[in-house]
Length: 69
Image (cartoon, rainbow, N blue to C red; front, side, top):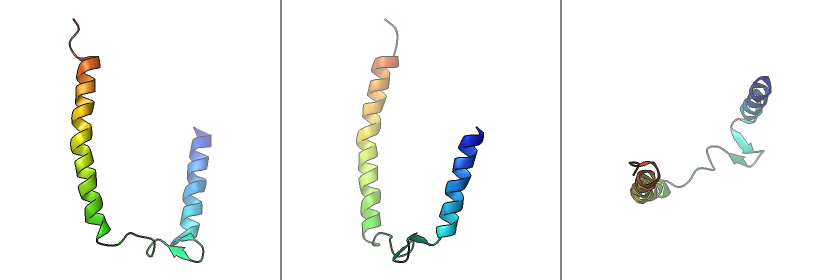
């Protein structure tokens, strides 16, 4: 547990020290974001993927964890 905490704190400290740069000196958090027109399209794609994925997962759950015969 101590090793997990130590590694987590090291990664958080490293990220905090790099803020706002992702790759020094060229890429910052602010200039690496997607265009504003891309984000709504991403939301639509995620929603459509959810509509396809969740019924299939529910069906698999019904098959393998359903009523015992």
